Image (cartoon, rainbow, N blue to C red):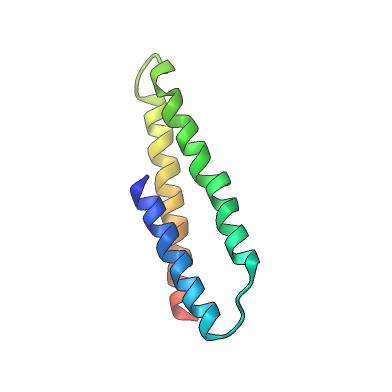
Length: 85
C-alpha cells in the first residue's frame, strides 16, 4: 500500500511540475487523483478488511497482491510516459 501511495504522490508531483512549467494547470488533474484513490486504493483496503473472513487465508491475499501489482505497474507506466514527454 505504501508503494502505491508513494507512486501516486510521485506521479502527482511530476504532473504538477510539468503543468506549472507549461502553465496548463487544471483542477481536473487533482480530481483524477481523487478518482484513482476511489477506484484503486479503496478496493484494496476493502480486500484487506475482508481478509479475516477468508477461510483459507490466502485467496484474498492473492487478490490483494495481484491488484497491488497491477496498480503499481499502471503508475510506473504513467510516470514513464510523463517523463518522456
